Every structure is written in C-alpha cells, then in structure tokens.
Length: 502
Image 1 (cartoon, rainbow, N blue to C red):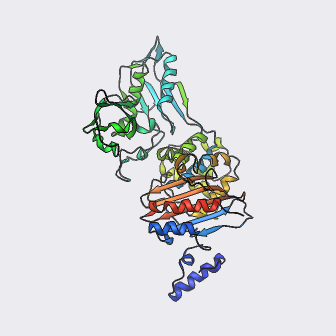
Image 2: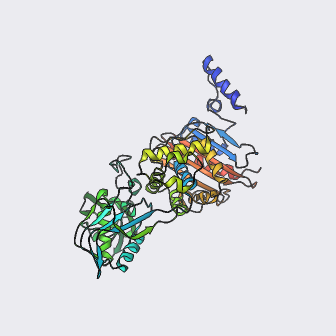
C-alpha cells in the first residue's frame, strides 16, 4: 500500500529507488500520485484490461483552500483527444470575448441596375465557423432585395483570410467521407457536407433520396431499391459510390425497416464544394449568373454590398464543446492566429489585439496560444503542445494538472459562466447525454464535461457538483491501445466525484 506523502518526498523516493534498482508500487511510480484510485475506477480498468499506469487523473475543489480529493499521475503528459478543445475555447473567450463575431462580406466591382449586376460578385470569407445553408440563403435574399438578381459576370470566392496547406481529409484515419474530417476554410460553407435523406416509398418499392444543399454539376441518384433486410448496417447496404466528383450513386438496396434515415457525408471533392454549393444555392434562391463561380481575390476598391455576421462566439463554442465539432474548433483556433502575439502577451484591449489582423496560419495560432498561456499561467503549469486546436491529432499533449489550472481559472473569469455552460451536461445533452443513466446516479445533471476519444485515447474534463455542495474540477485520461473500452473508468471517476460527502 502507498501512503500519502508530500510531492517532494515522493520525488526523492522515486530517485532513490531508481539509483538502487528497486521497483516501487504503481501508485508511487506515478508522478504526483496520491492515494489509491477509487474502487469503481480500478474495477473498470481491470475489466477493460487497461493497466493503472495508463490512467491519469486529478480531482480538486474550485475552492483553493479545500483539500484535493484525488491526484494520480497528474503531471503525466498525455494525448487529450478532443478535450484539447477546452484550451482553444477558453483562450478564445478570454482573448476575443463571448460576443465576438465573424463576418462574410459580399462585394462588387460593377454597377447594379434594374435587377442586374454588371460585374463580378465577390464573397470574402472571414472564417465563420457556422456558415450554414439558412444563413447563406438569408444573405442571398438580402442581395436580391438590393437588386442583385442577375450577375453578368463571375461569383468570385475569396478564401485568403486563412493560409492553409493542402490537406488530405483521409490522412488522419482513412475516413475521408466522415464530416469530422472536414478541413477548415476561411469560406467554410455548411461544413463541406452533403446531407442525404432516405425515405421509403413502399408502394413504389424504392427509397426516395433527397439531398442538400443543391450542388451545381453534381448528380445524385433520386431513388434506391428497397430490401426486406433488417436495418443493421444500412449505409453499407446502399453500396454508395463517391468516386466521381460529379455523381453520387447507389449500387445496393435500402432496408425498408429503417424508416427515414439521414446520412451526412463529406463531399468527395472538398476543394470544389464552396463553388458548387454557392452556385446551386444562388440559382435555387431565384438568382441567375452568366459567368463562372471560381476562387479569387477581392480587388481593392470593391464596393461592399452586404455583410453577413456570424453567431456570437458563445454560441459557437457550445457547438464545439457540447458536440465536439472538429472543424469549428479549428476555425476558432485559426482565428486566434490572426491576433498579434506580442499584444496577447500583454493586457491589451481586443481592438489592440485585432489590429492589424493577420492572415491565419496554424503556426501563428500555436504562437498566439503559447503567448496567452504564458501571460495567463506563467510557469505554474506546463504549457500544452498544440497542433490544430481540435484534438484531432496524434501530437497534442497536456497534463491533467494544467487542465485543472485552466478549469479553475475559467471558473473565476468574468465571462467564465459562458465557458462552463458550453460544456455537455452528464445525462442531459451533448456527448455525455448517455452518461449517468443509472437510477442512483449522482452525476446526472450535476456534471459539465468535455469528452475526448481517439483510437487509443479517451478522456474527460470539466466541473462536477458534489453531494456536499462543493464544486470540483475533474480531469481524467486513459492513453492505451484499449482506451475506448475503459471509458467506464472515467464515468466511474465522475460518479465518485459527484458522490463526495464533504
């Protein structure tokens, strides 16, 4: 058994053991380990075949004067998966403010007369993380209300606010058609996804296929034969073919027992998605265009016709944290890279940090977040290793202790409540809706959490209100090839924290 010892004595014991060639118990081998793991956590790890050495956790009260409840390998540098979104979103709340918005601007270099724009329409993306169909349609209706119904020229799409390397959407895990692998873009239209809806028509023996948005030059089979098979792997049963950028077809059948189903897929040619979808939406809204829809730059002196403002940052981070939206997280992270790192390092105003606005690059975002971390936490906590800010990475690293420091700092922030409310509530919504389902769960409705999962990573971090009335910052990670099977250990950690009596 390991007794609780001060950290400096634990470190000394580890050094002496190493020099003597001795092996200490697992809890003492773990940097910063204090006490034993809760029984429910240990049992869940054992059932999954995951060693305790792959687990790291820290449970501390937000009240700094109260005692820690659990410290286990809290100084271990781990891959946090999507839990890293907490760093990105809190840095954004602190640096940009919850009311920050992005703008998509529509310009012209021509003259509007009698419903006709004689010239080009320029659409300059500003990095809006949620430029979805309804908001694009509203912008197009505004332009048409101003008299722009026919474009005698081109629609030029300006993506230049972000400078990004070419990205293979399937490089991370081979799942190029999964929407979570969509790449960021200064003009990110509808997450670069096509939404397919299948509705059985038993009388005709087919499932009708609807799709949105309308995509110029993309043909999609309007129907697929029905089968009497059990629903099961209905997507596989369709035998969908996405190998042609101009067509989506189905060579299989759709199980009628499935009823209506929706399948969002990342468009197979993401580079042409914005052009195809914006042309399709413009024509569907009643507009006409004689030229091409193409990429290009907005010329100096172009006249601003309309400015489409995004949802506020507070709404955006709710999608990022509750639903773990990867591309939205990267959009926020890239926006931070447009700030001045030298001004971030000081207590400057938002206006100072935004002027001059830089072209966004991932390396600039990492530089800005590093400056922000240094100003906010100094050397007290090890700075995270950032990659794309979304956790969809094998490179990103952070310690549980650093995350607890962030959670405590956020709880005391003037806008901290909006950060906390962006998290998923256990048993209620978001990625933790299926947690805390037991009849006697103490965590249901009492835990605000961010989850993270990769092939060999699972993690959780956030706030838990205990039975005693104490609020805890709770962080737990498992880095192991069998990590997803051990997720019940993290759920047990949250339940244990929620049940603390004092």
